[in-house]
Structures are given as structure tokens and as C-alpha cells.
Length: 266
Image 1 (cartoon, rainbow, N blue to C red):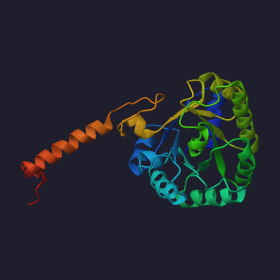
Image 2 (image 1 turned 180 degrees about the horizontal axis):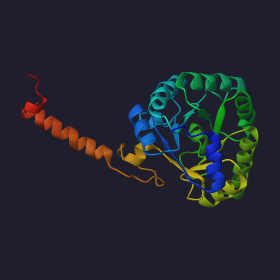
Image 3 (image 1 turned 180 degrees about the vertical axis):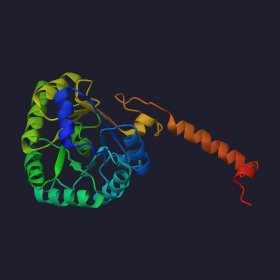
Image 4 (image 1 turned 30 degrees about the vertical axis):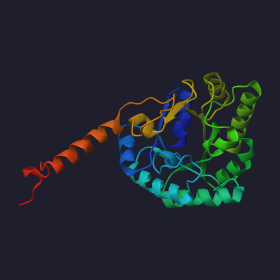
């Protein structure tokens, strides 16, 4: 089956078909997401927290994103793959962003990159688009700016902040972004953004009115113990099941039940 294209995503928006997006950080998750019809796979810098054990996305490097992006692309033959530009790999200048984005696409085989920021990133988005690099924007809660934003909390509740977000979204669209992620913003604002933009609006904690939804795969699968974001829905309890399986394995080894006849080579 041919890979999902940006033009197909645009058509889905125009027809009112919802876009299913999911993060993936490794080959097995990409295989599963691709096989079950996910339209867009995001190799998010959230891997810093859910895979690498950091407290935020800030320590993630370009090399980290390339390493994980390669694995995901090898497992995704149908879904459009987007890789995050990590913190300080693009903020210095549009030329720095071009070099970083070029490395991501050349070395991973992904189809697009994602960056955070609004109007201040318009020149960067425009240069990447002019250079043949597809760009997804990210507004609302932008995790790379979590300290400046005062923590992980809902953004753009005030009227002025909401107007600024819409202005930023339009600026990204004019600059050439093919889609924008809205994270942790009021549902009514997401609905306004969806109507205002011709490009798809992908929500995470942004209500049901968006053109599509994205979740962190570890939240969806229940792979990470502890706090689960209020906006996430757990479709399985994989971490708990993995612990039960490991406990059974340890008990079988210690009691001499593994390996048994079926696992023993003659």
C-alpha cells in the first residue's frame, strides 16, 4: 500500500475524515501502528521522557532523534513519518534549522519534521519549505519551553493568549507548514483554529473538534507506570502485564521449570 502523503492529509481535512496519529520510538511500535492503519507516526522528542528516562524533552539530541527515527522508518511503510527537531537544534537561526532538518530527513528517511513555536518560526518554516522539507508546527503547550511556560498546564485560556495562538497558527500556515499540532489548549479554541486553517489541526489534549488526534504510544498502551495525562486514554495495561510475565519467568527459573523439554535442544 502506498505511503500516506501530505496531499492525502489535506484531502482528509477537506472531507471531514479524522486523522489518526500516534508516536513511535522503535521498530516494533512502528510496525504495529502501521499495520493497524495509523495515518501519521510522530517520532517525538517525548522519547526523552518515556524512553530515555529524562525529566523533560530538553536533553534530547539530534543524534537521539536520528537513531530512533531510523528504527521507526524501517517499520512504517504506509504511515507518513514526522520526526521532531529537538531543543536547540533549530532555534539559533533558520540556517541551523535547515542543517538539522536536512540531517533528519537524509539519515532517517522520514518524510517531514516538526518544530515548536509560532510567528517567530515563520521565517524558518518558509526556508525549510523552500528547500523541499515538509514542516509540521506545534503550538499551545510546547514542551521545549516548559520552564518558560511555568509547567505542564493548559495554554491560551485568556482572550489575548487565544488570539495570539490563532495568529501564530495562521503565520505557520502562510509560511508553508502542512499541519499544526495544538497541545493542551481549550477545546473551543481548537475548534476555532480548525475552522480558520486550511491545513490539518492535530490535537493532543485539545478536545474533539480537531482534524486529528495524536497520543504518546506509551500512554495509549499503558507502558509507563505512574501519572497518566488527563487527556490520554489507556487502551491496555502493558506495563502491568509485562511485570506479571517477568515475575512468572523469574519464578520458573528459580524453581527449575524453565527451560523445560519444549525449550531444550537435543
